[in-house]
Length: 235
Image (cartoon, rainbow, N blue to C red; front, side, top):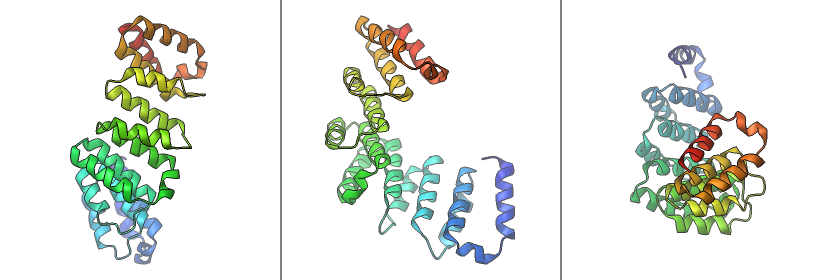
């Protein structure tokens, strides 16, 4: 993601045979590189001049817009896709999660009703959907979706826990944490954040208890250590 990298990408893209541009995988990686290096205009020019647009190209552009904080553009581009795949939908949800507006929430609800049921077996899509619902303040909808899901993965627990913290429901965060068999370091961090919000003796006792139980390897995570220190101080 450096200027040197961008210059190299531009140089090589001018030198390669035109026939290479008919390879959608090459085009997708080129769009991705341009977006990651911040050259949105060049990526747009290339994308819109391409006659054969495939879904990964839309995905690269949408993700690029999100990464470059051009969320409305990500949504506008999504609306041009005839049959979006689960990756496109996931990126849309991520864009809406950053916007946190009523309009974004309405769009999420609309799209979540339209997508094929098979998409719901994708834990990444589900996690991003839970995340956007929570960030837009629709806790009830997120809970309904989470508890109706048969295959719960740790990132889904994380999205729910973080959502509870963000919506000032730290007790629910703790209750959900207690349902996880083998929490990861991210789950621990969110738990500590919830306890830091509570600032009670019970929260402090829980922090101390959990901090003794977690694998030693977790302590090499500076974010976990920071959240643990924060919880201890706030309690």
